Length: 68
Image: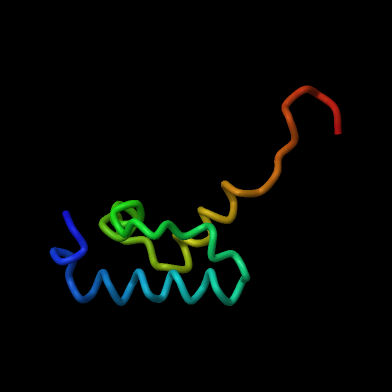
């Protein structure tokens, strides 16, 4: 689905996601490719929920080598 094919509702949702990321100074978490986030929208996630998931994934968890 191209950008031209996305509904106005999704475009508003995506804009809200971008604004949340900007307010958190984490714009890099939101892909410029709208299709990357379309699945979350289809699942019924709010922009806040999608951002929270992206932020959680971006958190450093260590190398997994058992050290701290």
